[in-house]
Structure formats: structure tokens, C-alpha cells
Amino acid sequence: MTPFQVPHRWLGILFGVALLLDTAMVLGEYPANTLLVLPGAALFAGCAWVGINRPAIGAIAGSLTLILSSILMRIVDIGSPSVVLWHMTVTELIAGVVLVILVVWRTPGFVATACVTALVVTCLASMIVRETACVSGLGDGYCEDYGATFLFFALPSNFEMSLVLGFILFVGSVATGLYLRRATKQRIETEMGVLVRKQWPLGAALAIMALIELSELSTHHLLGYAASVGAGVCAFFGTKYPLRNSYLAAGGLALAAALSLFGGAASGSSAPLTGLAASMALTAYLVRYVKVRHAVGAVAALWGALMFATGSRAGANAVENLFIGLVFLLFVAVATGWYFRARDRERNQTVRAAVTSAQQGERMALARELHDVVAHHVTGIVVQAQAALMVAGKNPEVALQAMEKIERSGTEALTAMRTLVGSLREGTAAWVAGADTTGDATTDLLADLQAVVENFAGAPVKLDLNLPADLPHEMGRSVLRLVQESLTNVGKHAPDATAVHVRVATAEDTLHIRVSDDGRKTPVNPAGGSGGYGLVGMRERVELLGGRFEAGPSGYVGWNVEAWLPLRKGD
Image (tube, rainbow, N blue to C red; front, top):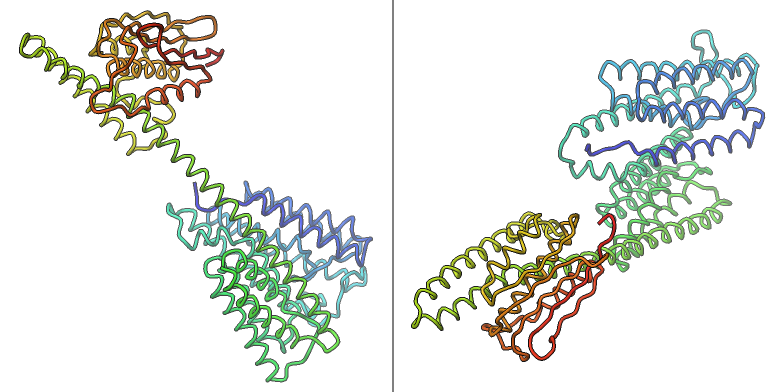
């Protein structure tokens, strides 16, 4: 998996917003142009969408779509709205940038060169073809005064600015594509790569605003524009150091406004659009990530500088309206940051609760495994050692046999411990899910039960089995643990028992497990004490499988442990 993936959802949202802007501009001034301008822009955006999976095909189809729509616009005598590039809609601008990035990023070098050349040439040709309609008097939509002459066509004076902005867009798009191309080949994602992947929608929006602001920039506001772009850069890195970047942006905006006033810059109606958007983003980051007492000062400094910069560029009559608008946008930014702060808090609480629950589950599973496996073997060792001590003087051969069983039980306990520790080092998911980690559970339940009975160090055990043929391994493992723990309890609490009966049988759709002994009614305290978790662990196992569990005295003498496990179809 590469560090960067194509953001389908974000691109769809971006194209949708661009089409809405174009629709608003066309319907606002020239509704008659809607049926040709908007479908052409939408088709070009569709080509960019195709380019997500097939960049070369999307670029070629986009070039053909752009030039054909331009020729049709000239034939029917209409122009198109534009913001950055002359006679190019916002949708066509964004789709062209996306296509350049995609072909540079995801196609071989010669294919990328050919596709980018086709897109650039088509864009220039479309600008010229769409302008000739205005020059020849065939259409009056979105036409301006002409200045220079290019290939016998009269061109507006703003065409040079479109070339400059287009070159900036071209360089930025190619650079972005090359960066993504290089980042895709890296196996380890860098910190900068993570930041770019998370912040690219904000960066793209700020870049578009900066271009729009540049297309309408006057020479009197160059310092303000530079500070506005600097605030955008601070906003892009705002998630990493929100407090520091906010003060840097505030200082830049205030300094540029002061220098502009000192230099006698003319007033106007334009506002630092990029700086305004950057200030809103930084405010949201401050409210979301920074403590309230620190965020208040940074927000005040940032919006104070923004109001100073905006007021220095506005006329006297517009200051009050700008102030009201800035207060409203400040409220929106604070509300947005507070919303995400509350959502982060809720997410953190959910994660902490989930982690606590998982840890508790792992502890319970580990305690159950230790109790069921290791305690079983250790109990056998203790019982055999007690028996050996009792008969050592009278019958050394029996004591020798007991010592052999102690050795075997100790070896099995050590093996089980090592297996359990190994599974914990590799991950707890396997043994929590019920995988074989103890070393003594296999897929053959009959053989496992017989092995447990043969290794039991207490009274003779009568085994009565009637197992279904398709018993799931997880249920078979639980059956094995129930029998094993019940026998362990017999060895601990009923050392005087002379017979133990183990029955595992199927009754209709239920599996019945019963372990009974004939020991004394009052149990004895085992050597080393009892943890008291055996019955609890068995009950948990049965309830997890949706069954029923009972344990208690059986009549005058003895003890019964019974469990009923449901056998469902498809288990």
C-alpha cells in the first residue's frame, strides 16, 4: 500500500463545488450560456474523474473535450466565465490541474510528457479560440478590452496575467505530481508525507484562493498579498504547531498592513482572501488542539491583525460592514474548532474504554488459561507428591511410580507455560480467539479427553462419551477445559474420592457435560490453597457459548459439575 492514494471523495466534492460556482456565475449574468458552458465544463471534470484510474485516457479525452467545447462556443457566439485563467471556467481550471498531477504521478515519463503537452497546448488554444468570439463581435459574454495582438488575434491586456498565472499553476501541478511520484515509491512514509496527505484539501483550497486574489491584485497591495500567502503557509502547517503558526501569521499580517499604510497605499474594497481563510483554519486548530487559556490570546492576536489588515485596505464606508462580517466568520471558526474538539474528546473516551475492555478481556483470558492448563498440571504434581510421601516407607515401588508421574506432569506444565508465553509474545489474539496455545489441545476431542483421564493423578475415572461427528473445534476445546478443570477440582478438594464419572453426550440439540465424584460432602483445603476461580472460569466459558452451568453437592456424598452447551446448525 502506497503512502498516498487517490482521494476520490474529496475530488468529487471539489468538482461539485466548482460546478456550483460556475453555475452561479453563468446564471447570474448570462443565463442563455448555461446549456453550452456548463455541460462542457462538466464533461471535462468527468474526464478528470476517469483519469483517476486511467490518467492518460483521461488527459487525452479532456484535451479533446476542451477544444471541442471551445469551438462550439465560438460557433454559437458565447463566452464563458473566468476567475484565474482567461475564459476558462473554475471547473475546467481545477480539472486541468488534477489531470496534470495525475499523469505526472501515475504514468511513465514519455506518456506524462505527451499528455501534459497536449493539455497545455489545448488550454492555450481554447483561451485564444474563446477570445476570438469576443474580438469578432460574435459574442459579448465576459469580454474585455483588447491590448496586444497574437497570431493576428486581438487579445485583452489581462491575457499576459493569465499566462503568468497559468505558468504558476503548471509548475505547481508538475511539482505536486513529481512529489507524489517519488513518495509512492517510498516504503516508509515520512512525517512530511503524513502532513501533506492530511492537509492537501486545505492546501489546495488556499492555493486556489491565492490565485484568485493574485488575478485581481493591484501593485499597492503586494505586501498584503505576501502576508496573506504567508498566513496560508502557516495554516497548512497549523496542525503541528498551531500556537506558533498563529502568532507568525498574525505578525505577518499586521506588519504588512503597517508598512502599506506607512508607504501610502491606496484603499480599496478588496480583502486579503487567503489570509482570511487561513485565519479561520488557524482559529479552528487553536480551539481544537490548544488549551483554552493559551488559545484565547492567539485568537485575539490573529483576528486583531486580520481586522487591521482588512481595515487598512477598505474604504471608510466599508469598515463597519467588514467588521461585522469578520466577527461572523470568527464565530464560525470558533464553533468549528469547538465541534471537532468535542468530537476528539468523545473519540478518545471511546478508545480508552475499548482499550480498557480489551485489556480486561486479555487478563481474563490469560487468567483462565493459566488456571485451566498450568494449575491442572501443578495440582497433579502436588497430589502425586502427597501420595508418594504417604507410601514411600511401606511401598517404595509405588512411590517411584508417583515420582515418574510427577516428572511427566512437571514437563507438561513447563511445556504449557512456554507455549503460553510464546503466544503472548507473538500476540494475544490467537489464544483469546480460542486457538491452540497450550500444547495439549488438538482437533481430536476424543483423544484429548482420553489423554486427560489417563494423566489424572487421582481416583480412577470412568469415561462415557457420545460425541457428535461435526463438533466445532472451539466448542471441543471448551469441553476439554471443562473436564480438565473439573478433574483438577476433584484432585484438590476430594482426595478421598474412589471413583470419578465423566460423561459427555449429545441430547437432541444440546451437548451435556457431567463430572461427578464420590468424595466427602465437606471439601478439604488443598495444599497451597485454592484460587477460587475454577468454577468462575468454567461458568464464563459456558455462558460465552450460550449454555447453562451448574455445580454443587450431589446428594449425601460427592460433587457434580454439569454444563449444557447448545448445538446450533452451522456451528
